[in-house]
Length: 125
Image (cartoon, rainbow, N blue to C red; front, side, top):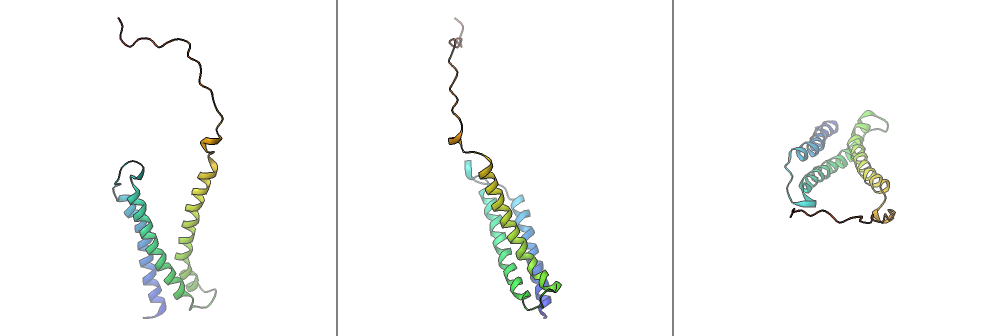
């Protein structure tokens, strides 16, 4: 088989893994309790993305055999560039969320209002 045929096969495999990371994670039922409920979905997403990144690295290395500036070489770069873009997007969202909201320690102190009268009795006598 020619190199381009292998790149197309691996490109299809990468695309399947990349799309499956979103679809499978979406249709997986969340498990767990409390804070970690749904962490299984995150792990499935990460596992598929790691597998897709490995295939993307293989495609990138295979594409280095093509002449510089050709569409085949750019096609071979696309999966890895999309993986890096997704990683930068996730890190950016985390950074913006951390910077955008001040921590509770920096919030100004608000003194409670004094009680003016006792609460009424719950049971009437």
